[in-house]
Amino acid sequence: MNLRRDVFQAIADPTRRTILLLLASQAMTAGAIAGNFDTARPTVSKHLQILTECELLRQEQNGREVYYSLNPMKMKEIADFIEPFRMMWETRFNKLEEVMKKYKTEE
Amino acid sequence: MELKTKIHAVEGRHDITVTREFDLPVALLFKAYVEAELLEEWMGTKVIKLDAKPHGSYQFITTDPMGNEHHFNGVIHHCETNKAMTRTFEMPGTGFPVQLEFFTFEEDGKDKSKLTMHMIFKSVADRDRLLKLPFAQGINMAHTRLEKILKNQ
Image (cartoon, chains in turn green, brown):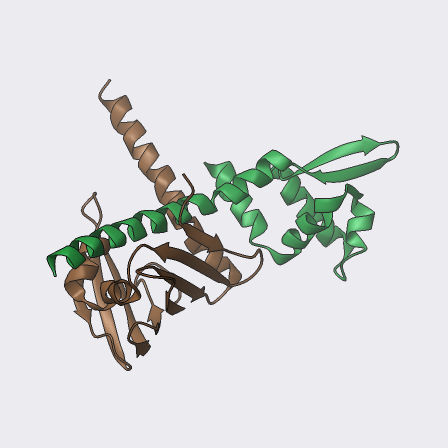
């Protein structure tokens, strides 16, 4: 439960969302990621740390370099959160259709 | 079965579009939004006020299964029969800022219609928080059910 909430806090930040987008196509080192931002490198490192702690990112040692990549399982969890919202409206609209069909026949 | 309700939410944007096709003539779909008794029935809410006209307003109170009251209200800016409605939507006391909603009602073939609901939020964070509300409620309800089961053992 706490972990889940952290994931949403993680993606609420625009820099962290950009990092996730950058990593969507390829794994990158911290230096290469930081190269895409005007902000100081320690700031980017802090964002990477938060994303890693939420398990949205995975670290992989490749020689002397550490590569960051997306954790697809965790990313899927974010996509899934929109489903309950959709279900809520689906249920409401089904009810609307039902109520109005009944209304039509009674008219 | 495929759901008829579609959600279009682009990452990092402060708006969301909900669309749905109805097996109803557009006049009936529109009526469901402007007549208090009908709206009460399908939304499962109590309508305190519903004045669907420009400079009109609405106020709903919904009681959840736990007995808590939830208040909803807003101002109706634009209302064009069987075509469109623009209104604000607010949930006082929840910490969510007011949001702007554009409803488009369209005829979609014989006795069929389509509703497009474009919601605009104050910020991306507010949008994401609102999207997560049913998700969070789902988790809370599952927890409550679980607690009940555990207590009864």
